[in-house]
Image (tube, rainbow, N blue to C red):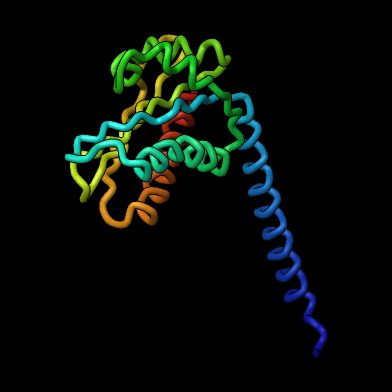
Length: 185
């Protein structure tokens, strides 16, 4: 290997320093993003099932609906460094006299979240009008005033075991984007 000319050496050094600066800036931005979300508390309620099919409430459908909360919490953890709080299923059941009540009454959902000391509440429903598709409906509620900040609707078609995780991931990305937008000065 031939020795570098002094001008080539300076240029190589400058490129190397620029690359190091870029890497350092990227690492700093990731750290700041994680720290910025570390104090953001989110509670995800158990998803409710509105099964409108001719044979509602099958065991498989109930299991899938129950898994949506866990999957969404996992996806939110992957998106940012959120503080996820738990709202007891029994407290949710006492607060909601029927399916869809908490979605229709965000102030009641906010009261549940207030007890959990969080900033945001996620209220979700899986609506299944037919066996061919379903809708994942999610509301993002700001706890301090009980306001619905965003509604997310995702149609789920195809093999449920393959498509549902993608839908949950898409909702987590949209929740993350919405929470970050609300935190902007």
